[in-house]
Image 1 (cartoon, helix red, strand yellow):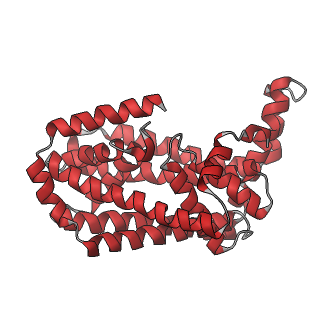
Image 2 (image 1 turned 60 degrees about the vertical axis):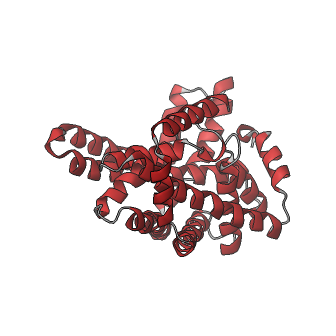
Length: 322
C-alpha cells in the first residue's frame, strides 16, 4: 500500500500547490444535482452491461441480477486498500455458480485485456489529432502492428490450446516443481479464453463489452459538455484513455489524487486550467466512487454477504492453489 499512498500524496500536494481555490469553487457550480443523477444512471447502466458481458462468458450461469451485483461489489472492493476487486468478485462469483475462483478470474483477465486494447485504440486515434504533424507516423504503424499481432496470437492460442500446451511442455517440463505449478494454471487460464473459439457467444460478449464502454464514453461526454462545451468529441476519447491509464497507477484507496491528476493532465493538453480541470475530475471521480458504494452495499446485503468478511477472506485468498 505504501507506494500508492506516497504517489497519491505527492500528486495531491502538486494539485493543491497549483490550483486557484476561487476558480475551483466557481467551476464546481457546473455540477448540478440533475447532472450528477444522469452520470450516476449512466454508470449504473455500465455496471449492468458489464455484468451481462460477464454472464455471457460464464455461459449464462449467474443470473443478470447476481452478475450486476457482483460487478458492483468488485468495483467497491477496488476502492478499498490493495484493490482486491478482480479477485474479490471472482471469489464471490465462484461461490455463486459453483466454479473455481481461479477459473472465474481467468474470464476477468480476458475482460481486462480487451479493456486495455480499447484504451490503446482511443489513444492511438486521438494522439495524432492532438499533436498533428509533430508525431511520427512510424510509431503508430508499429503499435497498431503489435496490437493486431497480439490479437491474432490470442485467438490462435485459444483455438489451438493443446498445441500451445504441447509447445509449453517442451519448455517447462511437466514433472518439475515449476511445471506442476505453472502448467495446470495455464491450462485453466486457457479454458477461460474458450469464448474466443465460439463466434456467436464471442460477438454477444463483445457487444456487451462495447456497450459498457459506450456508457463510460457517454458519462464523460455528458460531464464534459457541462464543464467544457467548447471541446471536440474526440477530446473525450483522449481523456478516457488517459483516465484509464491513470487509474492503473498505484494510489491510495479509491485512487484519491491519482485519478484527479490524470484528468488535470488530460485537460491540460486542451488548454484548460488546472483548477477547472480538477473540478471536472472531482465530479467524475465522485460519481465513480458513489455508484459502486451504493450498488455494492445493496449487492452484499441481497446476497447475504458482509463487506468486511469478503475483504478479509479475499485478502487472505491464494488463487494459485485453486
